[in-house]
Amino acid sequence: MAIQKTPKKKEETKNKVLFGDTPRFGLEKYKGLKSRYTCPSCGRHHSFVRYIDKVTGLYIGEQFGRCNRETSCGYHLVPKISDLPKDAPLVVNNNEIKEEFIEKDFINVIDSKFVIKSLEETLNSFTYFLYNNFPKESVDLIIKRYYLGTTDKWGDRAVIFWQIDQDYNSRTGKIMLYNRETGKRVKEPINRISWVHRPNKSCEYGNTYDYNLSQVFFGEHLVNTPNVDTFHIVESEKTAVICSIMKPESYWLATGGLNNIKGEKLLPYADKKLIFYPDKGDAFNKWQAKLSEFIGEYDIEVSDFLEKQKNVKEGEDMADYLLKKLKQRNGTNNKGG
Image (tube, rainbow, N blue to C red; front, side, top):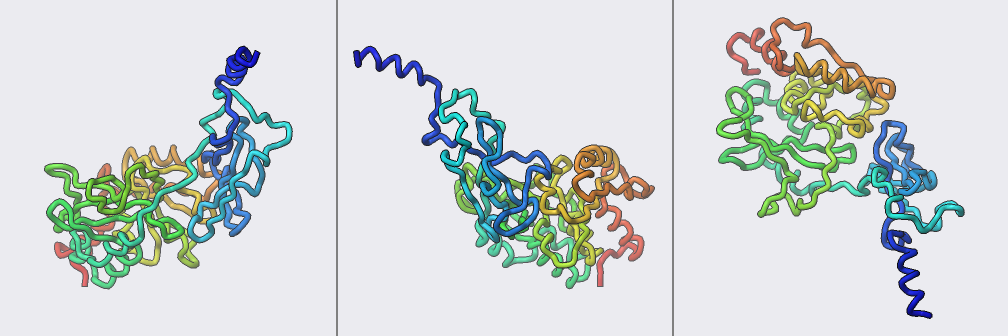
């Protein structure tokens, strides 16, 4: 009899999950500002992501979740099977586990020692252009503000635009090479752009294989600046830097790309005013359409300033506009005092 019962028992439990080693719970994926809560530990609004039951999609309890401020807060409470409601089934079919509810519960960051090392040398192909066109003290201030790094790459010195989050963790760094005279990106014979998190044999920035990247706006760490309620947002890191030099009393961020506006990247600015300055032309329509879905949750304005400027060409941005104004003011000699 025992031999006959064994296969029957296996047949009954086929494609079943008891949730022993298989996680029953997952962090809720971002679905707008309403899916991020106040942390029960540090009290920061819109920084707490809650755990849900991967079978039902329902929350487990208000205390279960992870604070996004992993360094300055670190609160992370994972629910157990015993925390499920008494009527919740413990054995379910595999196809009842809803993967769309799952979000990875960790974010990789670059070791701060690599950021510090990159700051030892301030002169690179990009900052050379800055020093040649603006006052030294103004450039020095902005290099420190944004933690602009330097690395030897492509037979030259490239700039690293570190993506530093509100907890001063470096999510990654965009490495770019510029023409020292024109300030334009080097794209020939190939586009000179790379990433700190990109794996390489030398592990130059640590072991970045299987790196779970979660990008932020360039300059996110500036959200901690006291008494700053308004941030101006452009597409390019270079533009954010130049705008900051020419308007040091204002604070500029960069999306890092035309299509890099996502809800999670807006979370740190829930209580700030955000003014977006898209490049002139098609980018204006794209950003206006994309940001319309967030206007009800955030204090957002999409500026049409560049659209109204006759001396700004299609595809040019705020940096192009400001550099033209500088050239007109100084004549053919752009160099600051």
